[in-house]
Image (cartoon, rainbow, N blue to C red; front, side, top):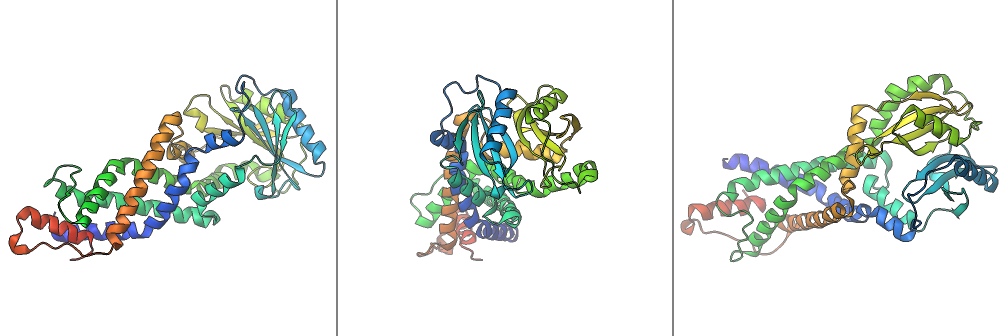
Length: 389
């Protein structure tokens, strides 16, 4: 690889790193608590000791909905979430059926008896929701999501260009070798290369799955426009109905239509990402992988019969697989600790990269007359990193 090609790769590495570093640091810092979001939730809101031993009965489901209507007779139930881990029924209510979910509040009921356990959002939820929004969209909605997706692409470019830059020089020294007797900047460079290469594969996986996650809103919008809108067209001008069929009937009908699937949550009739005439029952598989794959079923809210089973396209299936991989959810607590460790390592890579790009101090020089071929190559390496030609 000649000097001109190296300069091009150095340019790509330098500017892609400059563009994304600040945002990557924010994502790494906010990502740490999100890796352990389930454990944090369980700490503030512990599950019952026998959670997971029971099923969600129709009596408890209907009692929970009835209790919510009794407590807030002028409000509409918007969503029923079945928390299988804690054996609880979570309801979200809002003043109207078409209010945004920012205006909803939560009620928590027992899955065994339908008795109210808690009225209001659990402790710690507001903090974790804020961290999640900051991580996913920088509190800027869809523009923030797409911007962070671009930062993920820049991060991938920085990783690839960094590996390409390191490859020619790695042949002249051992892998991961740190030149402790040379200048401090060379030591920083060697540390940056070492920790960057050891975590590079993981960083690429997390970066690219993050890019996929940033496309969730437009991808779901595309699916709704192409596949769902034609089905809901005849109902779009109807007012949102107050369901006549109990939610337990809708769940039973959806699970009968999809054997082997279990309901995870149900949205009530609405014009916002739903149907004004139907429940949307979201089901998931039972295995570790299929539990991440959701299939929505439209159930007529008047009769409780299945109207439509919506097949998810391949790109949404890919998105569903990427989401848990991004946070290390597939392998239990052990994988989460590994994800957290690699997250901290990535913060170190970013920090050392900032030092190499902007750090002050006297720059090391190599006298050309005394330099061997290997030393000249190392000098070129340092000059490339320091932005000199």
